[in-house]
Length: 151
Image (cartoon, rainbow, N blue to C red; front, side):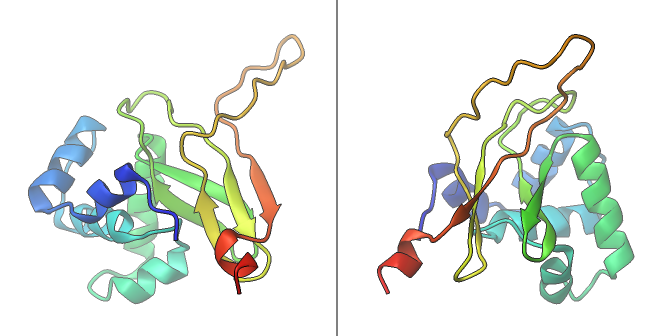
């Protein structure tokens, strides 16, 4: 299992840390938002809305989705598209709620269906045609993860 130092720290977040993280991103810390952030922080891999819904029994799906939408607007979560189960969410390493400074690729294992963050792996700079402005990038690499290869 691949665990980064950031992931390790996130999994150990308490309510005060979650509140501080929300405030750093310009988000008012409510009870529901703190619960969603804490659950995202505990996750070892990017998670789907359905996975969050099964882990968070005290909040309904629509409120979880609203929190995730707000988190995305404030660059607190990444939205990852391209796996087998649609959209996944993960906490962002960015410390700026105005733009995303944590752009990295993801790896989808075609065998175990798990999505991995390739933290600290840079996405190559893409030269866009005149008139295009990049806001974010999403690179999904598909193949077989080390865990599945060793089986």
